Amino acid sequence: MFAIRNTLHFCNISPIRHLSTIPFSSDFIFRQLFDATSSTYTYLLADTTTREAVLIDPVFEHAGRDAQLCKDLNLNLKYAMNTHMHADHITGTGVLKKLTKCKSVISKASGADADVHVNETDVVTFGRHKLQIFATPGHTNGCITYYSPEQGIAFTGDTLLIRGCGRTDFQEGNSEMLYHNVHKKIFTLPPATQLYPAHDYKGLTSTTVDEEKRLNPRLTKSLQEFVKIMDNLNLPYPKMIDKAVPANKVCGVFELSPQ
Ligand SMILES: N[C@@H](CCC(=O)N[C@@H](CSS)C(=O)NCC(=O)O)C(=O)O
Ligand SMILES: [Fe+2]
Image (tube, rainbow, N blue to C red):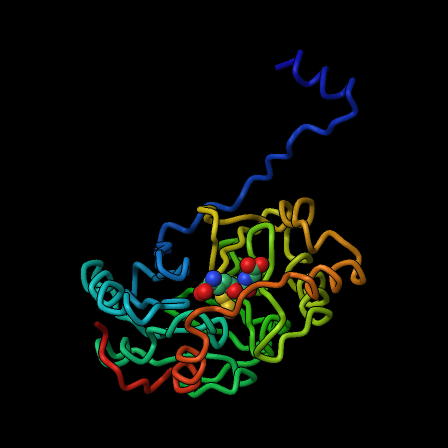
């Protein structure tokens, strides 16, 4: 070890920093679930004492799986919440409302229907646990980030992806706004904060504020360079966009049944 440290020092390379992340409270449940078709992550969080649970970014086709998981773990789903109005898949919140007694949640700014509309500084509670809401528009105008200071975790939706970020070429996307919101509201969280995105296309599962501040290939650039990168992504539109956006606009009351 001494030899490695010495060599790194000699080569002027800083050793990789190991920031200690906060361990989850013993009364906190966390599960990361996946949809392989859209590479979407859904998160189940719960309070082990009151059994109240929330789902973040559930997917239509997996509503049955998610409701069953709540049942298996003896959890009562209080809220099915979205980080934004998705363009690549249909939200599971409408079906989950039929399968459980949950309420749907999305930001007011998204323009989508829901039982509960949230805004910056609102707090969502389940049992004694809390998620603070930050408005982080840029990928869409209604994007929000859910943050738990106690657990040291944030759910960034498509605002900040692992070594990337959400595209800004539709749904009132705005790359300058995304840049400012990431820098002001996500990069200012404690460095060890674990970040959980709505998607990953390479098999990665989470990151930290520290990692993204050092390694994000887009957001470590100047604003000018970032805007140029975003203007030249040339990504094809998501295959589901014409079905998903109208369906997600009525996310709380979507009438279809899962396949
Ligand atoms: N190929 C996928 C869509 C991929 C895509 O556009 N992803 C979005 C997030 S879902 S709105 C995105 O922002 N990607 C950023 C990036 O840099 O990849 C499909 O057809 O569904
Ligand atoms: Fe998105």
